[in-house]
Length: 176
Image 1: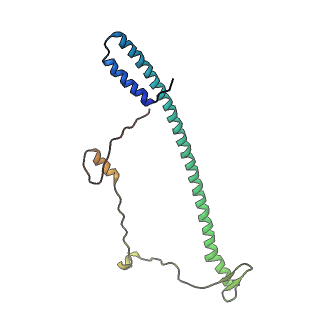
Image 2: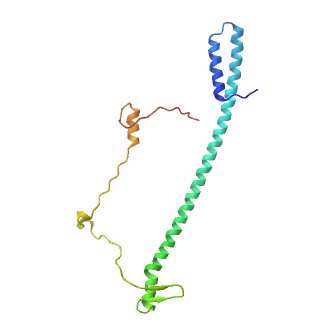
Image 3: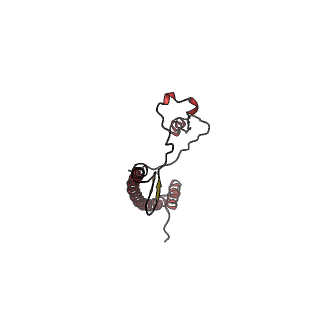
């Protein structure tokens, strides 16, 4: 005997319900009732299987979420290490090496077996000391536009028409 899908079982259930309404005699009603009972049990078994499958899917989702969280923590740890390493490199390049070249080098030049260091002066980054005194021509205004879907959802669910938006009803199942 071929196993029926859940859709087929529901179709059979609906057909049997219709047949029960039009049954002429008690024997026919008994046969249809028996078939309905069997179909209900089959649907119940199918739903138990689906429920078991859904629980396994939930377990997999939680395991994936835990793995993502662990990887995110590792990424954060590596970013902290990277910032510390960059900070150390910045200290060497901006403080320690210039100090060595200035103190030990000759005429602002210091050579090792692997590199030659030359001390020179250049302009550093621009710093703002007082924002209020900066002329307007040096101030930049940035604006961003975003769509407030939360507000639109509230109004759309109350029946308000808003151009450019639409919302559809969907069927969902609450599992408890």
